[in-house]
Length: 192
Image 1 (spheres, rainbow, N blue to C red):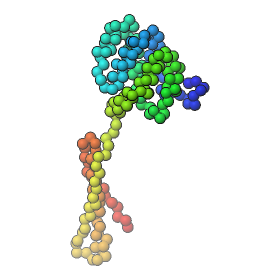
Image 2: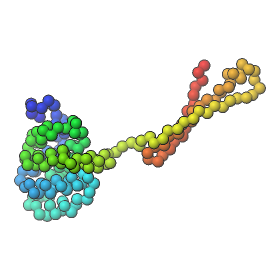
Image 3: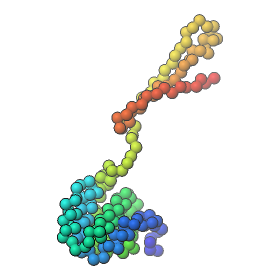
Image 4: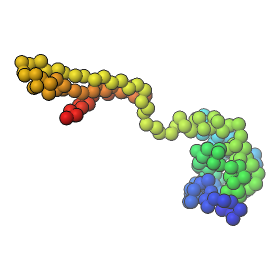
């Protein structure tokens, strides 16, 4: 990072992912038209669309070897997915552009990346990303009740008082967002 930034690392963290390093090396002689075609396909893939046809036609019409195109596409995917994970309140556009300049990405491509990350497609990309992220089930419902068993044997009044709340417990029931339910008794210890 340059000394003009108040932060120590880029939006990618302390270590640049190898896919992004490889992409920046392979972007040297890629023209703007091919780059935008690839970027459109990667953005579509991040949104959950099938973009194989776009990528196939780009590979067939390009003079760049398919292996280099694979490195570029993988790097684009990694860069955009990492940038979308960071909330806009933390990721500033100028800092993002400066990070890409330090990766030696051409200025025209930086503008295109920036328009995707900070443009009107961001909401769709965030929504698609959050659906793909693994997450734990959530609690949908929680019910409980207190169960008290009263012993009514022929005991003395003193013994009856001690045995009145002989079996005190709480029965709990939860329902999760994955349509699973669990029910269990939770015994309560006697207060005396």
